[in-house]
Amino acid sequence: RLTETLVAVCQDRVELAREQEEDEEVLESLENVLLRLKYELQRDQATPALRLLDDVMRVLAENERVGRHGAASVEPAALNYVRSKLARAFGSADVLTSSGHDYETDALTYAVTLGYGGGATNGAAQDAADSFLLTREEFVAECETLLRDVGMRDLEAHREAEELEELSPYSSRASSGSRISDADWTERKAAVDRVRLVMDIARRL
Image (cartoon, rainbow, N blue to C red; front, side, top):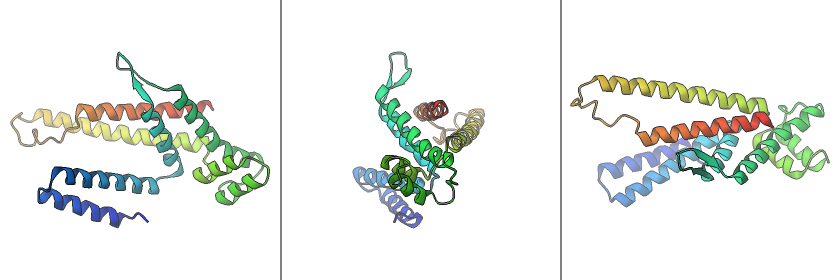
């Protein structure tokens, strides 16, 4: 089972490789492993809403195309997949609540009941287990919270960049490379746009 201790051990190994100036390919491989472990640990610790968001965000990112004028668009098949996945996840909770069940009592038990009791398909039961019967309202609310948190972090980063600009261009702090690169800002904006797209799809279901 992936634990914070395992991630810390991998982090120590990466730091050792940097200190000993090991081969660049070896260091890059270790860093990639560390990033993957951190991602998997964060996913394991995330709420059902954020795991669902992560799933659909990856699909959108993999099927995104940038047009001639820099505008991004997503392949129709990917949008249909996202709509279908969200609808199945939210539909599982809708089935339970419409039948008078308290879906928060025992999500996994009710998921099995859905699959074998004729109230829904086995696919709906699987989605219920995967998302712990997530409701549309809960999902959208967590997405909104995520966007607020990202906005606050970006605001702080902008303020730090402004402070660095006020320093002498020859200052060691100003040239420390602590600023977020233009490429990183572009990717962050693209990720925010994807979250907003997913929220819009969820609200329209």
